[in-house]
Length: 414
Image (cartoon, rainbow, N blue to C red):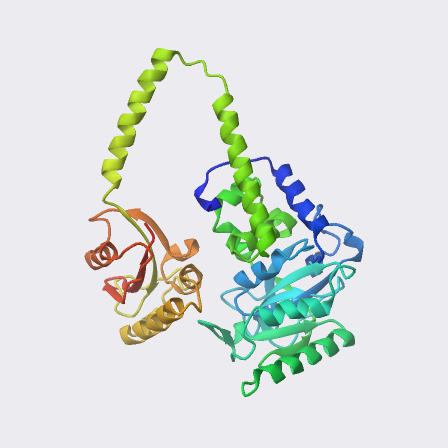
């Protein structure tokens, strides 16, 4: 069952009660806090007076946030920038900061010498300790890759443990030494830094995985950006959307969604109707005709996602990543093809997911939907793109496809 394919609105309070029951039954608890807003904890966070925070950088903060969000006891998560010297960094102007995940004491956080993209997590030290959080950190990324994670390469994707005090520094060093022993010939590149300051990322980067699932956003009432960022429920569902919740919780949420949908369907069936029998029969005939017409018109359509890399020969050089097209004007077709082939290899080998790479690397605005283009018929796309898509079976990925827009790889999804 894919919640994103549903279209149902349910009372938000039922969801808070349900996920709160999961927290009570859990053996481990985490929670997240905004360092500059220590007095503004989420209303649904338990025992917030004793909570601490921690910060980690382990690649793209979109997925890193989801790694921690569904751990039993997590209250809130937020992504941001730390570890650098640039004041008020932004996603497109990071300076020397990095994407990170933050879990540290609920005191003021600080900025180290080079900025990272990270996730801030608030946790209850009576239920989970810093060493356990380090275990999640080490198991969730490749600490041996230099300045990057998978296809994401750059200074902002480096691996960092941010610490707040000598005891956390000691634990970080001990676990790093253990990882180094395990890695044998490879060097563990993870840095250990004292945290000094935390810059929350822009609203569009918060709960990124959840925002790709409109059904769940609707389910919790389409929360405003600030409330979504602080919500414990949103942190859980962000992980659920990325399929990173522990198996037990993932199944519990699946079951709850199915139960809500079933009850809503039963309610609708039992609802009395004022339509006469004759009108109902007439409406049924019309609906059958509409359905038949719709089926005949949509039967020749396909659905696909794609990753587009533009180059200086592209018809339109602007990208959602760089609207001015400055970078693209210096990119040759050959380098674009080489980059796309490397991304395709990562997808085919299972190192990365198609939609994750599309969200970060594609120059098309469909990146905001994980590369999804929706359904289209013949004559609606450029000819090479159309022919390549129709030639694929559902689930297959194309080779490099050239169009006036640039070079693509396509995955047929329907």
